Length: 385
Image 1: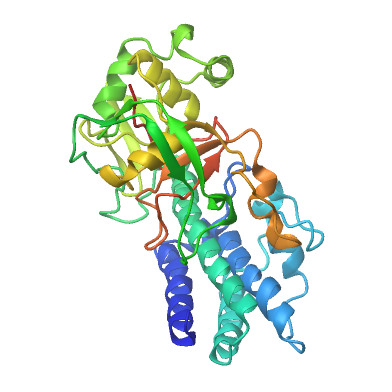
Image 2: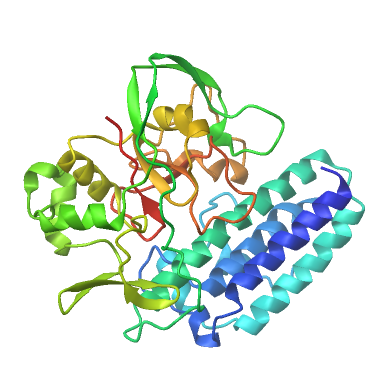
């Protein structure tokens, strides 16, 4: 990347994070209702800490950190960097204030832009690019965490009028047939990708048919009304335990009000649109629905092979593939190596992107991953037969 394009990309990405937060009130920046949700203030500070820690401190010998305590407060999971506050305590950090966090962003941004103006080190360029993609990941988390915070407020407050995000409908229908054969999987090219996409390799696939459309709310209501949440035969054993332990009856954010389904959206509580694409379901629910339809979820290799002929990007689509390394995968040395590799256990792969994904942050080889019970992201279902 040229210095001018790096500077422009840095400016655009950093400003977009702040644009996401513009509708928030001061009080909205702090809550952490559950451990897997981080306060918006923490996201803004952590993404800034990344640039300060991995670039400014590493490449500028006389760099003066904004606040010595911030590394402890805003490190996420990088053991190589040092001690950090517990993830469950992020909502307890009422100080520094959000005003101070924005001052931190401004301080680091100015230092970064000065650094970029005189940038020649290829290692630094690669780390800046990684930092920008890292912040884009946190932008999506900002959207979904803000929804969780507001969606668990008893008043269901509006984040932004007209920002429903769950109203999209399918444009393509029917099934696409992919013939059996050997296909190549994984990233190729000179553009950016994460290390978990590397290791392009061949896989053999049997012939399969994959749906051109995603499961809709009406489809899922039919599953619910047929007793889908009560029939243990449809569920994986861990999924059935999850249903019973949590008394689950519907997707996240759905409420049955006087016999009619409503859901919380970023535009407030609204009636469920039956024609819209289903969202906020976990792997257990996706698997049970597929079983009910006498179909299955695609593997991530089937999904990637078919992706060029599919309309994707509205929901993160659950696959039936465990999150594992590709052939030849190796973690980078130091803290950067903690980015993906150490999470390759007990998680399932999702492919595509979602309505919350930042612009220019999606590609067909992108491997998202979450635990099977998690559903606060904009997740959906594509079936295979």
